[in-house]
Length: 198
Image (cartoon, rainbow, N blue to C red; front, side, top):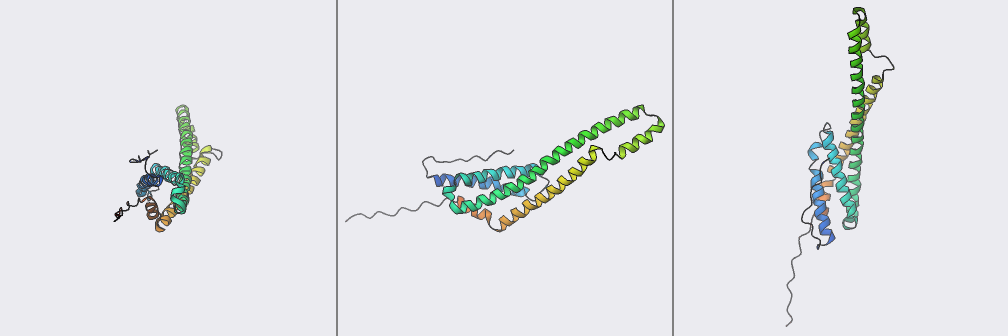
């Protein structure tokens, strides 16, 4: 998991809004630093890091709800939607890994069993062993695992497409621009010259 970008220059004497904007600016920069991975569905780990970054951004917006108001609420909902879409994608990645590991375990066991059978087989038995190894019986657990793995990959493709569609829609709607506007610290107002009493 990626580490959170540090937030420097927080001033304990400054108004809460100033510090909220500083923290938010870092979280926005961290979140959008992952933008290059969005177009690469194969980068599971980086997409998961984007999800973690989205969580940090969302929690920052939620923590400073009073400071960011309705504009912040809109961004919370957008970031939450992206985070949830990436969560669905990650769930498929986790299941694919688990099923793949189980399938590999069964295949290794079957391979070891086949090697032992071949070692003790007569020439006539070799053809039967080869046929059985190449065409597992209907109740072989590998068949079910392969089918399940295929469904998970199809589900992952669908989850990625949903995430990508959301990302592009929010980009089109100006999400980044609106987030940056929330984090923009206004310049200090120039002091008005004091008039001297005559």
